[in-house]
Amino acid sequence: EEELREKREIPTEFGETLSWEYLRYVREHPIVWTVPTRILYGDRDNLTSMETVRAFTESCHADLEIMEGGEHWFHTEKQMAFHDAWIKRCL
Image (cartoon, rainbow, N blue to C red):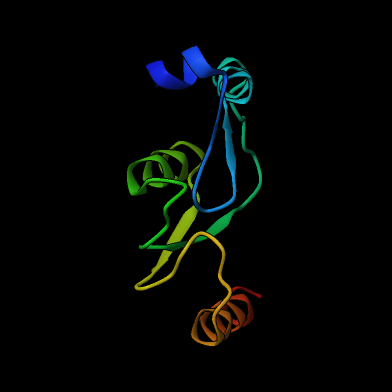
């Protein structure tokens, strides 16, 4: 976090740029969630930690499903099949 504060932006090897301004904005404007929510999370997510996802789901009373071997972006054939089946179950 200190490095991000100093550099303001840090590019990552997975294609996203971390932004100090964005982090500040998110912290200063917490989400107030009032609609039923379901979250699908990949246990190999390299962008959002399990701790962050669990804290969010608890704060907004969302249902959380975790795909073993899933990543932040579901993009492989197996991940997309899991994603599609999850959506069908949720509907």
